[in-house]
Image 1 (cartoon, rainbow, N blue to C red):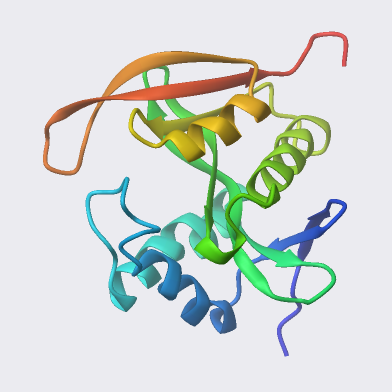
Image 2 (image 1 turned 180 degrees about the vertical axis):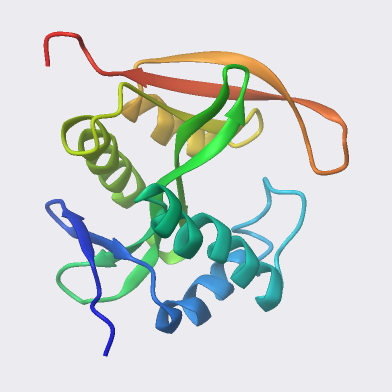
Amino acid sequence: MAIIREILRSDRLMLREITVADLPALERIFGDPLCMRYYPSVKDAAATRDFLNRLAFESYEKNGFGLWAMIDRKSGDLLGDCGITLQETSRGMEPELGYHLWPDYWGKGYATEAATACRNHAFSVMGLLRLVSIVSLANLPSQKVAGRVHQRREIFSKQNAAGETVERYLYISEKNSGE
């Protein structure tokens, strides 16, 4: 039996490495049009597995971090994911804090709680000095979360999968030199 590696805890949540058993619940999120409305398209099961293979399983091996399962500590339910992956920004590859939640859990502070815990973990445990979140200009709910978690916001341009240049908000947190 594989050991499930817990990463961190907050008041209501536990974040741990994603397992194969989590894939059906996460496929539901990535396949839902409402959850994916700020992404180019929904992901079918194969595309979700490929996405999580890169940003969770392979990232754990290569980088020591990735997207983590967001678990309600009281019920044990998987609410979504939250974690740190490497993403291209105007500065090159940077650690990016991202999150995805099933709609039943929206508006209850879970994304902010998980993202804040990840930010603190990134600075205090992982030793990162800078952490960003990339958010679509139209994604107001995610902007609210990122605005609570990060210190400032910039606009940057990036290439999307179709090769088009798109503008995104880049929310930024930097570890204070006195910490």
